[in-house]
Figure 1 (cartoon, rainbow, N blue to C red):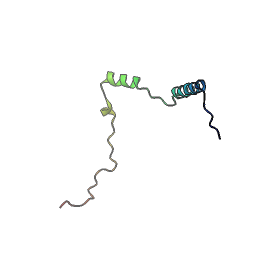
Figure 2: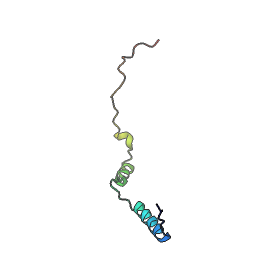
Figure 3: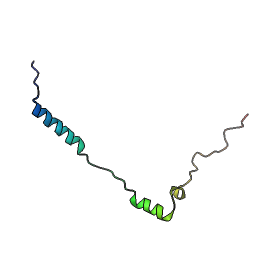
Figure 4: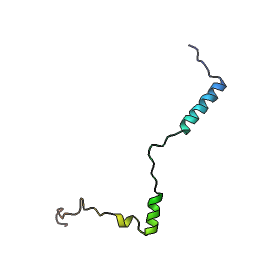
Length: 67
């Protein structure tokens, strides 16, 4: 069985086609933080003021005595 070789024009065309297909990506999800950061800077509060302290899995003193 003979191996068919690509000529240089088709090889360069396929290379460019592959390059453009990789470079043309679509963004499905996007996050923007401009308004959030502006509000945080103006009000002077960061994430510390909005943080909610969790009490899940807190110490229940059931481990016993340390010896």
